[in-house]
Image (tube, rainbow, N blue to C red; front, side, top):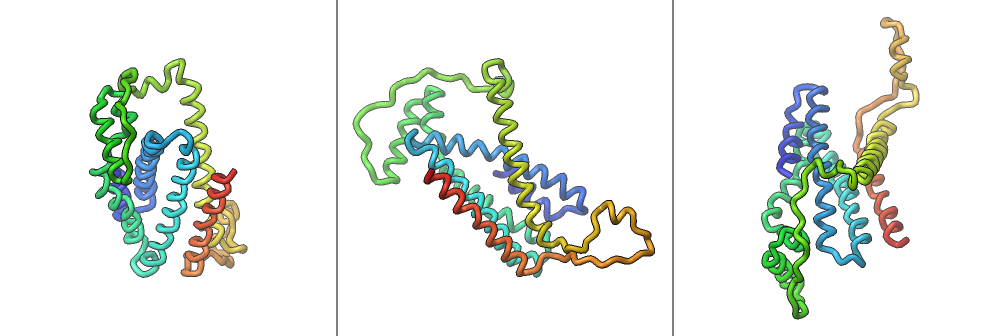
Length: 239
């Protein structure tokens, strides 16, 4: 989270487009690591409801897109893109203030042999939810040694690691590509020349182009499209 906040705010100080691309890439590295939160989240859930809850967590991606567009409506045209980019770090800052109170999962503590801490987390969760736990103690399980990066590529994990890497890359590539195409389609006029056409133009030749910066109307269109994910997620949960 600190990584994401730092580089998100640093984007606002980019001296040129090249540096902006590099720093945004580093923001993406932090966001990629944030996917581990899904595993953490799943360890708190009963197996019966786990798949539905993991799908529903994707709602926050749509909420994030909506928040970003709202920040653009507030700051992009009046204060410029630097203030807008810095403001988009606000959710991460809010999360960071609450991160101190987020415990490790009972599954993690149990796997490390720390059964008392696992029980304390369960008792704490029960107290917050106002329920009483049934009598009993946590049964010891086989202690799993902490993993290493190279373990992902050992023979018994290699196929799964490669499959997950391809799946995440493809999903992110298509998903983010669609998001980027949204603003491109809105701002691109029908008479704008393509890069190849631009290269073939005579420097002294003039041409007509309808390309324009994002207007308030355009931002509202993007805001409406951000909500389009919600019905899809609802259908995924239902089926």
